[in-house]
Amino acid sequence: MTAFIQYTLQGLALGGFYALAALGLAVIFGVLGVVNFSHGACFMLGAVGAAVLLDSTGLGFWWALPIMTIAMFLFGVLMERLLVQWLLRLDPLYNFLLTFGLTLLLVDVVKRKYGVSGLPYPLPAGLQGRFTMGSVSLSTYQVFAAVFSIVVCLAVWLVLTKTRVGMIVRASTEDAERSRALGINVSRWVTPVFGFGIALAGLAGVLRAPTGSVNADMGSFFIIILFAVVVIGGLGSILGAVVAGFLVGLVEAYGQGYAGRFSQVFIFMLMALVVLVRPSGLFGREEAAS
Amino acid sequence: MSSQLEHKVDVELPAAPVTVAQRPVVRWVMLAVGLVVTLALPWFVYPPVAMDIAAWALFAISVDLLLGYTGLLSFGHAAFWGTSAYTTGLIASNLGLPFPVAILGGAIVAMLLAVPIGYLSVKRTGIYFAMVTLAFAQMVYFIANQWRSVTGGENGLQGIPKNLGPLTDTINADSFYFYYAALPIILLGVFIAWRTVNSPFGRVLVAIRDNPARARALGYDVERYKIMAFVLSAGLAGLAGGVFSISHGFASLQELIWTTSGKVVLITVLGGIGTLWGAVVGAALVVTLEDQLASSGFNGIGIVTGAIFVVIVLAFRHGIWGTARNGLNAWLRKRRHARDV
Image (tube, rainbow over all chains, first blue to last red; front, side, top):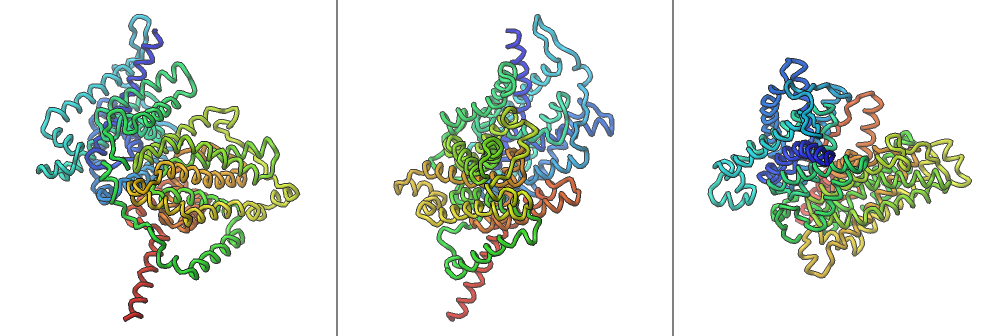
């Protein structure tokens, strides 16, 4: 039982990274119809940025959170204006390929500048040590990461459901065509939404930095897992991205705990099952027959 | 959503044979030139690099068969290339069979793997298909990485022998001879692809690509055709991957990782989607470029290939072969028009 609780919390912490980043992926896809392959690279940039910030200016984790989030927002805006926007009217495969090329480029630029070995990133002050409750012992940072990402997901959820901007974004996600017909200027929201999605990936990266090695390749497997997450959740669905993110985190943690080496295979088996039983994803809507 | 996915493909794929290729003379001349260049290649290029070009060309053709002629972007073809590379290596190392037999075995295993993956993946289309194939390929990578007793984990399989009965010593002595020994396998793969796209089966695939609903209404089992195309394509990727692993004498996780799937898509798009010939041109360019960069000691190949990819997708979506063909067609049309007037 103790082990179970431990794995559950680890899974929630892991799922938090997935949910945050997948949320960004889902919002971007909803409003722009773009599957951003470079989401993993942006996650990596967030973490590497935090490490570089610490190294060059001494600004730690609590500064890196807002600074890198804003920096990645601007990066996203730049990316949309310079590259992505030119292909928006074409088949989404083209932007998929474009952002794939961008991923290769970004990863190797970081590799050349900072090498392949990891950059060190310490646990933030106040979140070191362990958190003991009865027989369960967890790293304080893991608990913080899980709670923090749940709070951010909830905040995004509130913004999307309770504010006017959120309503516009949701309407565009649901049906961009009809939103336009109802007089909403969807194009005006395209750039900020793209930036926002990238910012979420960057935020997830900063949050991940203290838990392991910060290096150029840290986004390479992350993006594949993210794809599995959004396929499971249903790509157009914001709720689906968050729920599937935590679900996949839990599956990975239980797999690691109980099955050892083959843990990540379970994620893909879950994806296979969802594709088989409910091809449009847990929260996705049925596509028209192709 | 699906309405967004359709009708926006910018690349004009040949629904009917195009003007240039329609002329049998042009077709035969192209074929002859292609064969001569293929046969002469190891005289101009370092033979192992020539072999790499041939293997990647067939690999890219297998992707183009799906992307250009069936309308499915597989972003997980490294699974089949790599699975065959490992299987070929295992057969050649453990059973001592001639290498063509080992490669055939590798291709068959790749096709068997493609049956469940294809069955699941064709349930989705467009961008989803790309993501699902990518994820399944990653699963194969994870399994190969962990199944160390068979795959050698991070070390991979090493010392794969080149065995060819009485010719074994000749092909081992010089990679120049090995090129000619392995080339028939590549040419067989190319021939299968060429026959497929020019067969009634190939026309059905194109019909599915252009309008799946209509193909279904005409009574074709769309999903079954897609699975068949997927398995066939995996077999071609398997032939290519087998040749690659025999040629290098090793099979590593590099063969299974998603950047390999991405590289072959890059080659296909760079050459020109839906052209088959483009895959050959793309492979020649990318393999040579990477070889040059690697030997010059530049350790950021992704910066170059990534930038090429971005530029191609933004500005040259027809690829090299597609752009050249469209230009030639426009010129021919203009000339004919001038003559008629």
